[in-house]
Amino acid sequence: MNNRLRVSSNYQFFDHFELNMELLDHLEKIKSRLPIYMFTMETIQGSPEIREQIQEVFSKVFSAMKMGVEKSDPESYKIIARDLGVDPSEIFYTDDKKENVDAAKSAGCRAVQFENNGQLISELQKI
Image (cartoon, rainbow, N blue to C red; front, side, top):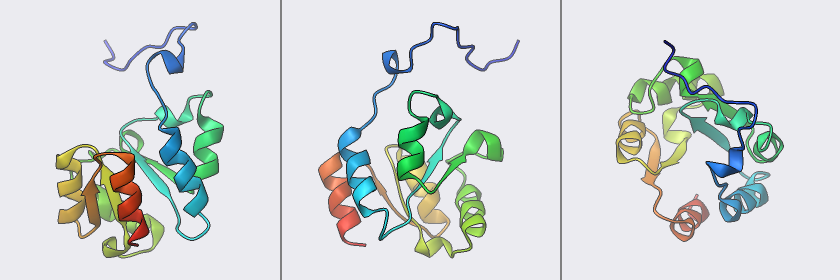
């Protein structure tokens, strides 16, 4: 049996997830000065309920599942850097999981662990 979550026709995205609107609003404001990308585990960003909001903020979304990689593997960040045509040192990455932040750092990215909106916004202002 396939281990992927099977979604029923009455599945309601917002019953299971919440968007960080404060952070999305901030990213929307800075995207003209700084390209913003998303690296996610699966394909949640394709959910019809949030697809438009995601497309408005992020220039591109990278899915670890579609790429066949793990976010905890430093090679995944090197693949993204090659795709973007940049050196990993030009990438600022944040994640709430330490192992993913460590992997990004190991690949040569500037990376910080997400603690809260204020902390991340402060880090973004340094760029």
